[in-house]
Amino acid sequence: KGLKKYFPLTKGFFKKVVGYVRAVDDVSFDIKQGETLALVGESGCGKTTTAKSILRAIDPTDGDVILHLDGKDVNIAKLSRDELKPYRRYMQMIFQNPYTSLNPRMKVKEIVGEPLLVNGIAKGKELEDRVAELLKAVGLRPEYMIRYPHAFSGGQRQRIVIARAIALRPKLVVCDEPTSALDVSIRAQILNLLMDLQEEFALTYLFITHDLSVVEHISDRVAVMYLGKIVELSSTEEIFENPKHPYTETLLRSVPKPDPDLREELVPIEGEVPNPANPPSGCYFHPRCPYAKSICKEEYPEFRNLGTEDNPHYVACHFAESLKLRGVKITL
Ligand code: SF4
Image 1 (cartoon, rainbow, N blue to C red):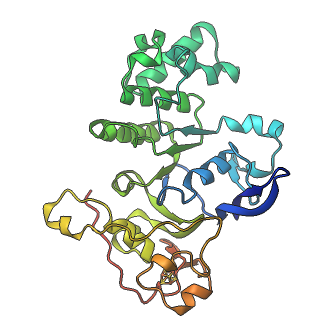
Image 2 (image 1 turned 90 degrees about the vertical axis):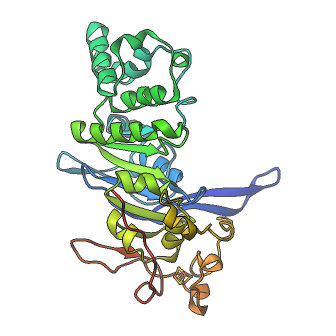
Image 3 (image 1 turned 60 degrees about the vertical axis):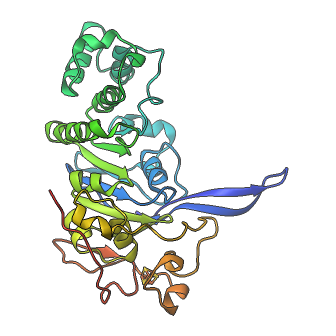
């Protein structure tokens, strides 16, 4: 709720603060238990910073992060480092690159077993049994636990990362572009594994990606982010078939389609992402927006619900009601 993360820009020997990069600027959304919310947008729009602020891998500048746990609300953003420790196990992260997120000096059983050991949940033979179960759950043979990461392919390494992330039965798993460093041929396997595990362990995912074809496959709802702000948020079907923000339309039209009849519609995103230290006036998207009018340069549009109570569709655009934007039919 109202999450902000500003990075100071400093100058000179005394590091005088001369401005701020508003990487996350007043972001609010909820994720329901068991669902997958995709956070999408171009590189540098603030997706990963949002996720890291939620997990307290970095401290947010302002705002709340409410974890609803056993009937109680815990504000993760306001806890001290010590107070935070018992809650860390409920929120885990799967990183983008399995080649850098595994310690090459640790065997698989140490990597996957570490969270269980550190939290005093299992040790000795019981720990090995738990690691074997986790490896089986992610489609790896238990005998692999005595090997080091270098013995595995990219897809297998990402399975090890996933086994470590689910070891503590987390409530929320943040998946930060978990397939983008992998070979195209194994991306679907990892996505299917994530979906199977979600069902088996009742996991909730915040899924960060710039790849809309992945979003279509995995998510229940989509939040579109631009320059540190959420500009549109609704169900996956609504976002794809009935987008209401011009930036979402632009993102959808820039996705390559396998169907040759649709290929000519591929339209690259025009222009550069503006500097977040010096965002444009009014609507941040106006310098790139084909529908911009004079008010767009003056006022930031309100983020409002144009959907129903049952299927909300939030959008921040002055002309969202009148624009006839083109979506794409979901192909699943
Ligand atoms: Fe485009 Fe104006 Fe809507 Fe911004 S508010 S997305 S500039 S039409």
